[in-house]
Image 1 (cartoon, rainbow, N blue to C red):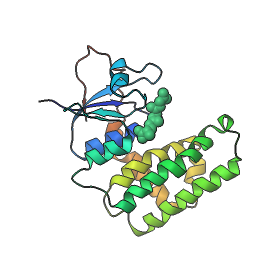
Image 2: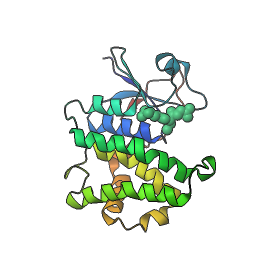
Image 3: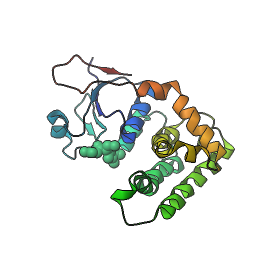
Amino acid sequence: MKISTLYSFRRCPYAMRGRLAISTSGIKVELREVVLRDKPTEMLEVSPKGTVPVLVLHNGEVIEESLDIMIWAFKNNLPKPEEYELVKFCDENFKPWLDRYKYPSKYNDCTQELVLENALYFFELLEKKLEKNIFLFGNSRGFSDIGIAPFIRQFAHVDIDRFLNLKYPKLIEWYEEFVDWQGFKSSMKKYPKWVDDQPVVFFP
Ligand SMILES: N[C@@H](CCC(=O)N[C@@H](CS)C(=O)NCC(=O)O)C(=O)O
C-alpha cells in the first residue's frame, strides 16, 4: 500500500498541528524528520520554499502549508468558516506578536508592553470561547484546538510562571489539558534526522 509522506520538524508548531491533524483523523503517514539547517533535497525538490511541514500525497500531490494539511486531514469533518477564521487569526495576528515575545532583541519595532497587549487580546478571545465550552468550538477537541494550541504552548514556554498567572483560567486549563493529552505527547516523540536509505518510519 502506498502512503503519504510528511516532512516534519518535531518542535515546529506548524508541523505539530499537521501531525496532530493527521493522527486525530486516524491517518498514517511516513514521517521524515527534517533538520532545518540541513533540509533534504528530496523535500526541496517538491517544495522549494523550504518550510515544514510538507505532505506529499501518495498520488504525488504536494501540500506545503500546515493549514492545508489540516484541511486535508479533516476532509470528513471540515471546520465551520468561523473556526477556520480563528486559526487564520492566530497565524496572521497572534504569531507576529509571539515572535516578538520570544525574540525581543530580534525585533526593535515595538515595546514589550505592546507585544503583551496584543497577545492578551488574542487570549481574551480564546478565554471567551472557553467560558462556553471545554474546547474552542464545542465539547470535543477540534480543528482550532489543534491548530492554535502549539502556538499558545510556545508563548507559555517563554515564561511559564507568567503565563500560568495570567487572568485567563479557562485558557490555562485548556493549555494544561493539551500538553497532558496523550495524543500530543505521542506526536512529540523524538526521531533521528531522516536519511534516504533508512527504514520507513510510520506516524503515528
Ligand atoms: N506558513 C507555513 C509556515 C511554516 C514555517 O514557517 N515553518 C518553519 C519552522 S517552525 C520553517 O520551516 N522555517 C524554515 C527555516 O527555518 O528554514 C505553514 O503554515 O506551514
